[in-house]
Image (cartoon, rainbow, N blue to C red; front, side, top):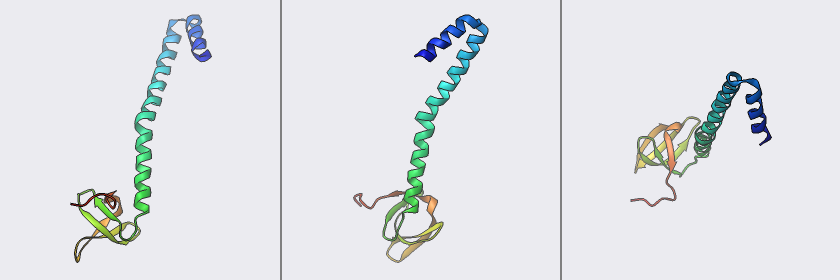
Length: 108
């Protein structure tokens, strides 16, 4: 509260040109902080969770790829996975294409 009072006194004493530019600068900083809190930070948190999920994949996990392919992890390598999508049908996919785990979800 003292900070706002200081700004108001400085604006009154310093003239309208300096006060309006300081007010404008404060408004821009405030907008950036609000954007960071509501947009950038949650996105970074979600991206970190997805990366941890991909690093924790193991044999037997049931996953969904970006393309909508449902499969079971058969083999895990550094950057790729082997998924079994049907009996004796296996495909090799990039780890970054795996977006969801449906192990606990009901299957149709």
